[in-house]
Length: 330
Ligand code: NDP
Image (cartoon, rainbow, N blue to C red; front, top):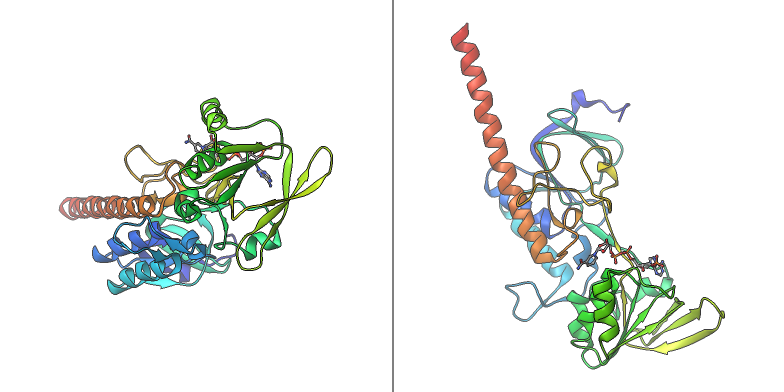
């Protein structure tokens, strides 16, 4: 940030960082409150839903909707009230004084009176070529979103933590059989989740196995597994592969600037979206590691907009009082 000239920077009342359901809801509410939000879309406009296929659990869509279509609806609604959506990723921030300083794509300086962070989280993937190719066609990182598409089918969840077991237990409602593929012979998940998963008849644990490849032309038909102890390679036929190997909140640029928890989620004050810096608000998956749903992200986006609007009004009122006091004292 040293070489960036902020004397020529555009100054905005409100900057929203990120355009998933949280960011676009915050943009909708702040534009309707006449705060003229400028919204930076980041490297994945539309957020995680832009890589999802059918969404059946967002209220208001009785027949379901494709994830990318729904995000276009969010975007159009925010734009209708004047939200200014811009290409660009916020690459660094300085929240030590107001107006807050931000750099877009490592070169453009921007100032803001208030900031809403909705940078989301990214599901972790194994990094296999076919895993990426079949994403949305049998490969998923969200059982709550996609589990219902696998009624009476065989699916697998990769991972041994709470997310993996929670996903596996959820999938037993639909699937015929749920394999949990774990690279070790010991689970990382909490004891209560372990007990529940082990007691569930539909779940079978495949210990000491890694997924080496995902099979299928247009849809997943199976996976190639490697036994980490014997080295033996085998094929397991299935229709769905769920990654439960963790999520990573997109909060790297806020390290040492905002208070983050031990998993790097932004800490907000209870029942609010206030972060550790007054005037900076956080919503959606960058702040929520519990619910992680589009509808809850949209809900916290609305909360952030209302919190930011009230905070800005309080600041303006305080500034007016200071100005009046200085006028009367002169
Ligand atoms: P964790 O980091 O706890 O677990 C990730 C799991 O994925 C581990 O078992 C890990 O294996 C495995 N893994 C990681 N990378 C790979 C890889 N490349 N290949 C194969 N396996 C891999 O993440 P979670 O998302 O499960 O949990 C994150 C936090 O959120 C935890 O604190 C958890 O308790 C919490 N949480 C709480 C929930 C609840 O309370 N309801 C629900 C979900 C999460 P290994 O064990 O070998 O490292």
